Structures are given as structure tokens and as C-alpha cells.
Image (cartoon, rainbow, N blue to C red; front, top):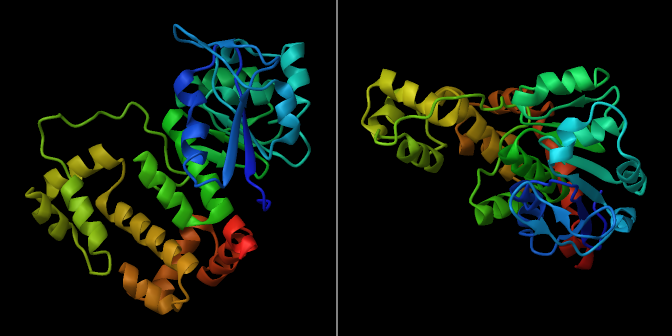
Amino acid sequence: MVSQRSHRVVVLALDGVYPFELGIAHRVFGSADGRYEVLTCSVDGNPVRSDSDFAVAVACDGSALETADTVVIPPCDIALSLDGPLPQEISATLARIRPGARIVSICTGAFVLAAAGLLDGRPATTHWNLAGIFRRAFPGVRVDPDVLYVDDGDVLTSAGASAGIDLCLHLIRADHGSEVANMVARRCVVPPWREGGQAQFIEQPMPPSTSAGTAQARRWALEHLDQPLTMADLAERARMSHRTFARRFRDEVGTSPGRWLIQQRVFRARELLESTDLPVDRIASEVGFATGASLRQHLHEAIGVAPLAYRRTFRATAAMSPEVAAS
């Protein structure tokens, strides 16, 4: 639950930290119009070596973890050497995390959480290419290498760098709803929503750069979700045969056109449930589902709740936002 003050996110930079992933929390949470305060710390407050040709200077030492609402552990060189207890100085630093704080790992940051015993008996994920090493090192963790991220309540883990962005957006959506998460995604120029259970993109071949793509057809579809779109409609927009369009679409998006349309309709329905008082049947019509029953079925398959339950949950979350609290 987000407090009325800015939610404090503290990123712990460990030796050999990966600079790109280190910056994800600042870039994503920092784009939410002051709803989050993001700090970076190291174990002792001194600069830490990155895995690149420079060091990273930080503003805080490990005491910052004592005030964190969310702690983020990005990947680092030392993670892959962990197959037993953590070095004492890191263990002591993690012990400073206050009870009730969310703990988040990005990519191999999960190795740090596992070595600290924070993932014992829990579901978790990490980069698919390292899942075998992770499983052998930490057999007590229920690792799933096929998903983008795992939300297990107070401990959340993500796969590679882009999945770390997805997980941060997921947290913003849980804290403040889809409207705020979408705003942040637009500012970061990233997809606004990928469910955690979506498969990691494992050695997926990219289409030739000279080939015609499906992006224009997808943009058009998003503008016409209320219409009964067919494969023929999309293929015609892309000026491709059905077969070619289906193949190119899967290459570029990682799923079939039909499945993608359902995902987008569910996503739009979630936005309308959060931001309007429209009846469920009207929302179903607005997003292209034939009936309210169809919307209920697809929403339940996607996130396991009924539309009205979803609306009640996110209206309650929105009521906790700083803007509402101050009004």
C-alpha cells in the first residue's frame, strides 16, 4: 500500500553492477510525476565498480534500506558466483531492509535474493539462459524460466532488462492504476503492459530489417478495437497475404494476431474499468467483445478476477494516491 508521502524506492548497487539495469528504477519510477522518490545506495556508501569501464558514485550507504518502501536489486557480476551464503557485508546490508518493504530483483539480482534466503519455497524467475545454474545453486526456489516476472506479494523477481521495466510498470499499475502506468510507459517509450506470465523471448529470430512489418496494422487495430476485426482486415492493412501476415506478426510480437487482439481488448477494458463508471456490457462493446459475458471470461483468464471486483480494487487503490489524499 502506498503512503501519502512519496513512495521511497531504494536501489542497492553491488560490485560489478550492470549500469543499464541500475538505471531502470530511476527511469521508470522517476517518470511518475513525484509519486516515487528513488535513491541509490551501496553497502558502505562508496563508489562501486560497474561491469563496464567506469565506477558508479552513490549518494547513500546501506542505511537507506531502513527507510525504503521498495528495494530493487539490479544484476551484478558477483551474482553468478553465489551458490551458498552471501558475503557477510551484503547479508548485513540486506538485513537492514525494514519489515513490510517490497523487494524486487532484476535479472540475476534474483541470485542475491536466493542466496539471502529470501526466495526459499517461493516462485521466482531470472534470465532464461541462467535458469539451469540458478536451479542447481538454489534447489529450494521454485524457479520458472519461461515468464517475464513473478509477483509473489512482497518479493518480486524479473527476467532480463526489458522484463525489469515491465515489472516496474506492473508495480506502478498496482500502486496507482493503469492510467498512471500508461503515462509512464509513454514517457519511457516502452510497451505499457506485458503480463508477467508472458513467455520470455528466448532466441526468437527477428524478421529481416528490409521486410514490411505489421506495426501499421497494429496501430490501426488499436484505433478500431470496438469493431469486429478479422485476420483478413489486418492482413489487408499490412498488404500481405494471410499466411505471410500471420508469420510476420508472430516474429515481431511473439504471439498470434488473434491472441494479441484479445490482450489489447482486455488491456483497454481494464483502463475503462479503472477510469470510468461505464457498465460492463458497455465496456465490452467499446473494446470489441461481443457481450459482457465474453469480457468477463477473458478478464478472468488474464488476471483471475471479475470486472466489478477489478474495478473495486483499483478504485480503492486510486483513492490512496497523493492527489486524492490531498483533495
